[in-house]
Image (cartoon, rainbow, N blue to C red):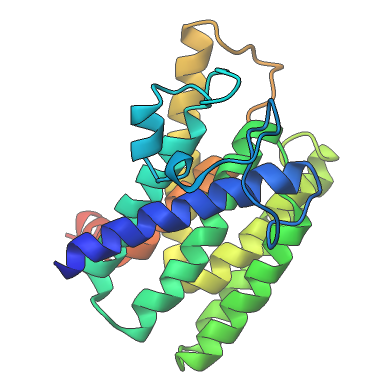
Length: 249
């Protein structure tokens, strides 16, 4: 039953994160005001806002103007529920669980926002950095590892930004690198960076092969970094242990 509660809680939080993403782009407050249709601006009733179910029952159409509802909404809701469930499976009902729940919310916002708008907003990344640092202090984790991770993560992308003059990565990736280091620590950060570049290369080559992108086309890197951060958060130590065994044995 508690697993089901975590899943439903994830759906609800995912619905809230959709509101945050939408209103961030419009520079509107997400702390007040009722949810409304982005097209006709009609205020939505509570039964139009049931996570996942409303999308299904309304057949992906607004009840009032019949405009198609973006698939972003159910996907973010379902993804949040799945990620929350994975965190509970990994960390159980502990302080680490609640800490990573909060940080995962930041990662989801960054993932979707960068994927849609090719931008990692400072209004998300900077508070996330502060929260991650405070949580590390609260959890009594090794500050040496996370501070080193933050420095390495930030400098890694800062160097690329400086050498390419902002062509390879954006300045938002620098702050995301700092956040990754604070969440994962130095060793697991390396795992996340490896995974991000591996998956990014695979996706980039695939898009070139199907002619969806050209060599000169921009490809947001934030989604790969945030996804790799979550994977490393859950399985980073196992991946590192497997790799070291593979190399040395």
